[in-house]
Image (cartoon, rainbow, N blue to C red):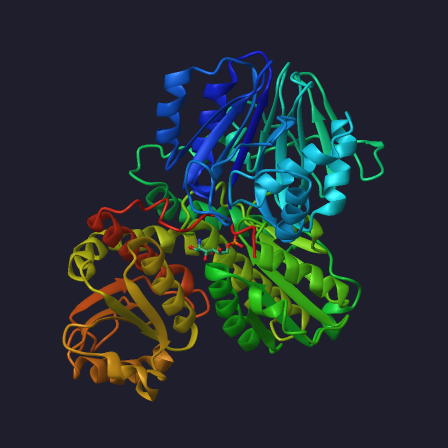
Length: 605
Ligand code: AGP
């Protein structure tokens, strides 16, 4: 939801902080600020994008080799200069930045007001600063622990404390924070891309860690105030992942990285026609497995819906798919024979994380499909399969979703084989088909031209429909979400068979409808549905497999995609939907990578 950076070393901090914030701008971009430590802390902050902040920094040239920075996605308080981070406490004891939500901030704020504290902003973050100020006993670590015992909710906080101008302090709970270990310098970041240019050695801050940073040291304390041993991890991600490398937008680059993302994800899971998962299920678990829950948000939820069709058909295990914000509050029925799968690119989505914890508390075996190494969801699952898609910077997910689909295909085959429903030969054949998908994705990228042409027909529409049946149906939801979230054109994904139960009343002359019809068994039904909407004036864009007959007569535009096993078609079909959203947004002149109101990782409820 927000991006935090910090630097402590011997170089001027301001440019390093700004560069780090630019790498994290996808996490939130409605205001930004930095604080540079010294005799007096210098705070520079501004509404809007990082460029606005840089313009302010150019006016004051804050000198210093220690600092913190923040780029904001507003939760409490409008995006303006006053609510921008960093926030300094009334007595100047602490200046801090925060990612997360303090749920009991009003109660604490009122208590502090009665003690004479005057608040400048509407943020929950300022409450942390004033509380720290009020509880400060001369020991920043003890004070952080006391603050943590009072606040409820989620937070990742970096702070500069008066009288300790040669160090930076951090604490976190339920929001990501990474320490980059340098040589005579250390870095703080919400996500890996901000520290990659400087170091690959990092410490993943854990919940209820209280960290004291100097330029030469990383000291971590626990809730008991005692120093903890820390493990330094090496980041395998390349710096390249956080660069556009000649593309206009990260989204475009990431669409074109999908063949590699898919290949790098599934290849380690397939050895000589057999499936090798990176973790073990409990002994006999898969034999007894009689129910699977897949829980996720947004596009990841659409992956779960797709997986349902495949796993149920191949492995004959019932699959219940939930959006995480509903699952966590619906008192789900779970037991030790349940498998709960959490799909998340960031591995930090608050609702998905909470659902994971709820499932573990109810005894279910939990596994996750995650793209960010060492992320909270990955660390807290009983088993994790990483999607090796590399850093995904665009807010609209593409290559991570593609990689997640790859894991679902492998998992479905693994479970079918475990259940004795798929013999070794068929398994080998299916895994070969999975391994052949990257080449088909590559070929599907050539639909770039026709999707660019079609985007000219839809860019001025106010509303659109995506309709499909069977395994194409979840892709209708995904295609609709992609279009909505970056082009701001309202659209709906709909089961084609459901349209006539009410919504077809919205179809009128010129309504654009994307009809996805890749399942041979359902093609005739889809052709009927296309005729129904066409008869009411719709402009129909059909997405079908190469060689599909009888579609040109019923659709205005046809996008042909390579053919594959129907279980694997989603990895092909999703590509033109991504390109359509991308090109439409470019034509509309909007920021493809940083759409309004959104952030890459939703780490608050
Ligand atoms: C997809 O384009 C969106 N950015 C959003 O729906 C995203 O998929 C969702 O917020 C889940 O994020 P996660 O995969 O990091 O958990």
